[in-house]
Amino acid sequence: MVDAEKLSIARGQLGPKCASCGSPLIFAEALVIDSEYHCFSCYEKVTGASSASEPKEVSGLRMD
Image (tube, rainbow, N blue to C red; front, side, top):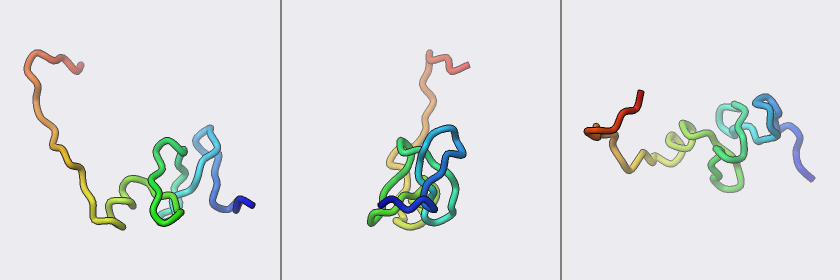
């Protein structure tokens, strides 16, 4: 049975709450660690992981 305390509809969709900070998520953005859902910032804190790429400027590409 699903624990209703771990779910949220705060963002217009049924989704989990972050196990670390409790913020509402949608399943598409939730990251799983040991069967618990985490937001991206908490995932980075728990795992120590960071982005593998750095942003860069691309000439000729308008992003306005």
